[in-house]
Each structure stands twice: as structure tokens, then as C-alpha cells.
Length: 98
Image 1: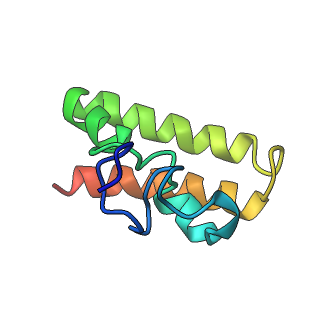
Image 2: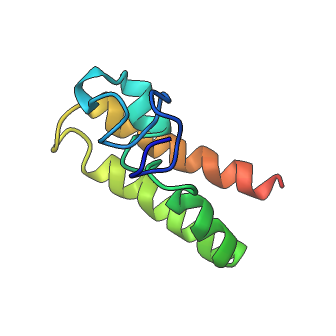
């Protein structure tokens, strides 16, 4: 077990101490489960969904989708930014179907 993140060493999405370096991750990995989001036992998005009302969570996700589209390509890969925006939109749908 990694002393930093508590996950088994070598796990696909371990922390910066035990997981693969960012440069080796595929674009989909950086969209769906980036290591900096999965370094703890729960992802922040799951905590937010648990503590926010459904309406607040929907607003959070849709706001992030807008933000990623607005800034697409300004920090790097435009396709990755657009995929992340789509991820947040899909997360709203997944949350509402529970």
C-alpha cells in the first residue's frame, strides 16, 4: 500500500508517488479520472454530489461544462477540454437518473 494515498502500489490511478506520471496517461484517463482527482479515497465530485442538493449539483456540473467549453484550448489540448465539458454534462444525466 502507498503511504501517501492508501491505494495498492502500481494501481492505474495511484498518486504522484506511486502512480504513473501524467505524461504517460492517455487523454481519456485525464478526462475521466485524472490522478490529481483520485489521490484520495473519494473523488471530490462524489463528495460534492453527496453534500449538495440535486439542483446545486446540477448547477455545479453545468457551470463546469460551460467553463471547459469557454476556455477550450487555452491551456492545452482543445479535444481534452471539450471531452471534459461533455463529461460534466453526462455526470448531470447520470446523477438525475439515480
